[in-house]
Image (tube, rainbow, N blue to C red; front, side):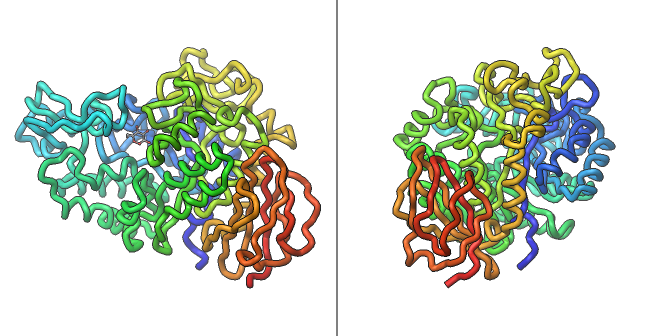
Length: 544
Ligand code: GLC
């Protein structure tokens, strides 16, 4: 089947606030982003995921929403949003936005009304308790930054539930009036042209965390209802859930194709890092094998890093330690006892071969790839910043003041710019890399272009191919009589590999991407050379 646009998409996530400032106040805005759409279109991305841009006290980087129907005045107006949407559409770029409805900000008028009047209709929009049960410390989302999931509110005379920060009271999803509000919010943005939503904190929407006597029937019907609503309003819109859950919980989110279309592939992400740390393909294969069959309309969103910590919570303590030892050996590089707060290139010691290997893997793994602003130029992190903000520094456009992000004084920037060291904006920026044919940016454009020509990666059936080298991850994706094979050498030693013949009877390989100019193969997939951290993709013409 040819449709399902999201199965051959290249998704790029950004925070408007840190992407491009058009008016010199130090804060990125919609006008700035609109000016950079040609850059994004040149890069080849097909869909943008915008982090929350709603009015917010910004306790949690905008994930604490004060008004669902508006744009944070620091970023522009609704008019600017519509102009941006129009220009994105002109360039064939779709837009999905963050839908943060597990909780509101405590400054939201609903919460203000709920806390000040027991009889207000908004009281039941939230979850209250006179004597809340204790939640074990180990289960807190932000250990060290949060000490409970219940907060006593003087005005309300009761405790309210907040699975995240205390400034983010949880909405009571079992209340039908809350659901109606959520549909209305979704309807509003769909009417303005968005192609879907990233469903923030999806497990907390349907699991009765912290709720006594939950209405399970109501909770379980929530995802299909959401899908039904979106399908009726806009048939091609997608729901992409942030659900970092164990394999047996995954079917809850896809259903029979009647719930979410996409899920972030947290399991594969964590196993990918395990494979990199061990230089062993088996861990990546294991990550893929853990994923259950999903409906034909479903798709995985593969990613390397995003705006949060790289969480390793689905691995064992020993596995986590191995990854920490390889990529985040210092305590300051780790967070919440389970994750890493670094960007990829510094984790890999800045080795460009290694960085490219990982993005080549990302773009060829079964599913749809997600890139994050700055990945394409190899931006670094700033570990002197607090918590997760280490990876949220502003975009580095040029070697000019503030990396060309803004003309404001440096102290006025929404988030700091990396100005020193190997990853400082004078060394790592878009303009310089556009001029350099050998830059990561130009390589990334080629990688994206190639990936889009092989929809079998996103739409096809995948198979792992056994090789005679434990460090080589090899797989094949087949779709509509087309097939592509990719090999990735996770080790820093060159090797020559052979795919076991009973795994692969494919012939006539045509090389479509490689880290290096290799000798052409003689028609069979035997004795394939791979440099240290080398990768090769082959289009194979006959499947037998
Ligand atoms: C999601 C976001 C994260 C935020 C949290 C609470 O996990 O990715 O940044 O803190 O939800 O909304």
